[in-house]
Length: 239
Image 1 (spheres, rainbow, N blue to C red):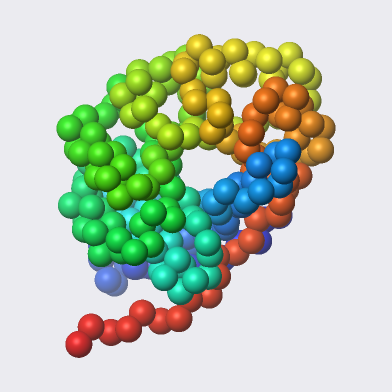
Image 2 (image 1 turned 180 degrees about the horizontal axis):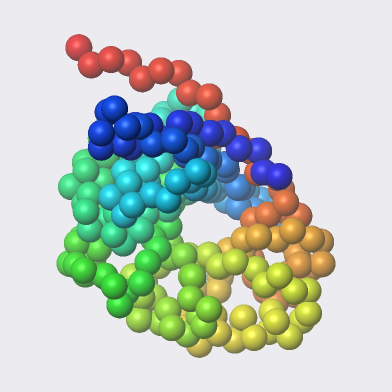
């Protein structure tokens, strides 16, 4: 089990008298080079327990996670951090997210943003493009999370985003054929293989296959264990 921190989700409730009974959970998975073990960045993962978050609630959770990532950097509790933002979150909270990066310009270059979502369901390509360009202007790495069963379906999103890196989940199987099929789909989709991350590496066999396939970076218990987000000092109240 990954080392996890949990917070009550009551702050997400629209009605003060009816708080949400559930938790927001977080853990951090280090991203390492599979050959050298060199650390690239530590990715902050969040999920919910005990309730299903609405689209708006997910956007608020992701925005709060980004704020926490900035505080980790400013408190020197982490060297480089990755965070996930969905297309829907960017579309809804573009101004807030842009202002957050503007307010943390001294550490923003130490953030890696992993975008996720379906380009078919994207409502505003303009807002996504503006945010991507805003990040690039601040030397923030922009990645893309591959989630389709067939990676070639992601081609349009990859062509649109032109990400600096991409992440996908490792096959459960240690059969070489499964990995060969995956890498073929990755190549067809145009994924930047020199900065490809494979997550969910749970066995040494998976790691060895990933290395043979030329995958440069990995996450998972077989690479290095996850750890709970660090305890941060309370934010100073505004004057």
